[in-house]
Image (cartoon, rainbow, N blue to C red; front, side, top):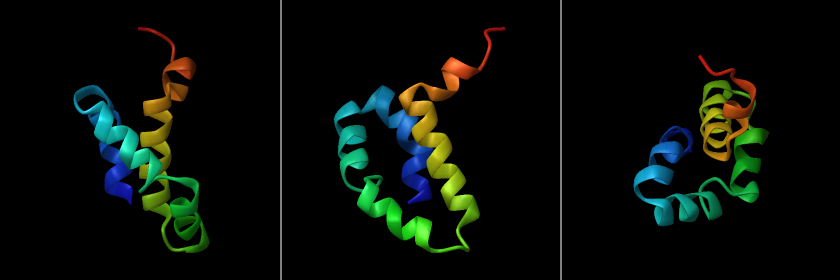
Length: 66
């Protein structure tokens, strides 16, 4: 699952249809519940969070321009 999160922003640029499918399947809320339930998946959770945050624009909104 962490691989999907880390690749999501690149997929959105180069294969938007595939990125949408990944969000509907591998990174859907029901899929993320299993990641949330396992307390030993700290790094996986962070890769997924950063990938989704970057893909959705949350990080850009909070990072000042150089």
